Image (tube, rainbow, N blue to C red; front, top):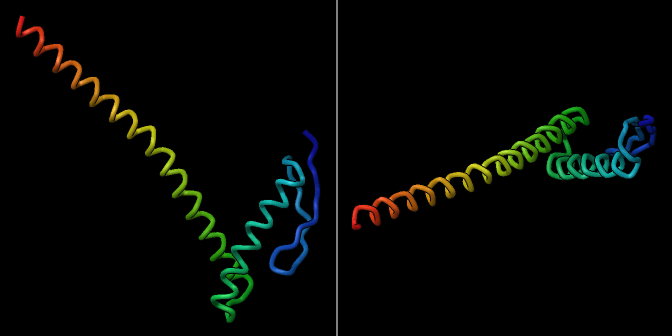
Amino acid sequence: MPRRKTTVRIDGHEYVIAGDEPEEYMHEVAIHVDKKMSEIHKKYDQLSTSMVAVLAALNIADELLKERRTKSAKPKKAQEINEQTQMETKSENIARFNRT
């Protein structure tokens, strides 16, 4: 797949970025970063751009990790429910066997 280049604006500065993803996706990522940085700038206008960028990166990493944990917890919960159902079924089968 050919590398694509596009110009994005983040925190008032233009950057040329390159990637294998479609240009629209790269803009979507840049818009997300820009929004995070703007939120932080509004709350803490005295911070340097580099500090705002680090805090934005930490916030985005936090979102990602929480989402990953939520997704990995769902299959575990489903598996636990399935295992519990299997145990209940086995217990019912044993109880039925003992009654006969």
